Image (tube, one colour):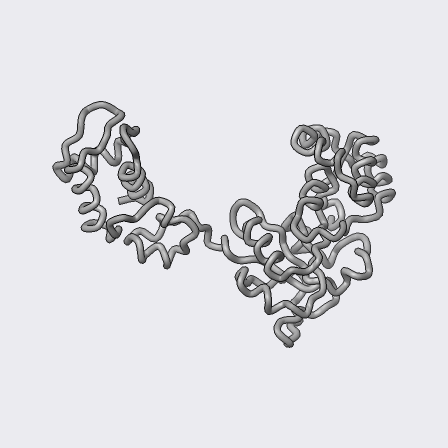
Amino acid sequence: MSDRLIKSALRALEAKGKFQLSQELRGYLADNAVALPGTSRVALGPKARRALIELLERDFSVPPGTRLADLEGLSRSDALSVTTNEKITRQGVRAARVAVKAAPGQVLKLRGSEIALPEGVNLDITVDDALNFAEYDRILLIENWEVFERIHLLSYAPPLELHAALVLYRGQPHGYTIGAARRFSTKLAKPVHVLPDPDPAGLHLAMTYPGFAGLALPPAEDIRNIIVSGRGVPERYLDQLPMVEQSLNACTDPEIQAYWTIFKETGRALPQEEFVR
């Protein structure tokens, strides 16, 4: 039985009234002599409901009373306490983990120990490891993976106070997730300086990030010079406006406004990979 079928069965048990019955679930019930009307939308009667609960427990060790919500956030090994199919969970392999490293030229400080990581290498840890990095007084959050990976090749010097910051990857929808990084930084509870894409969406990411304490971009005028030299992309700027323009116009942070003014005046924006190429 596939993970999709298990979820279809649980969804059927939670449905109130008629629901759309999948062909996979219909076939499974038919194979086990559970008769249902021939229409695509059906309602499980008491007998069919009891039979489906018993089948889930018999064939796949799904305990009676299990709900779809019980599967959220489980690791694959934890999922085996609910069913014999470890893939039933939506939790990604690294969904509760984050990637961190030291700033270039620094050692990584971990519970009183110092770890010298080679350039381009990071430490893979869990969200719950955040307090092991309490020696750090601030976080440098990097939006994109390649810049995080190649931070030692950064083409400009970040502000002096960030030279000894804990460098944290912001995450993405899959792999190291955005939510895990946010939980990690919230648990560590240090000021967060953000190195985002120099574009409207990047500014919005920074200013709305929990604990935001400032940007780690090159000086605003340097960004202007790069853009007017021909490196800026109009489509990048225009495509993002509908999502963030109102929020950026209302933002009163002078640092955010300095970059936002440049993007509006030039009508262009950049990817942050510009600074490690």
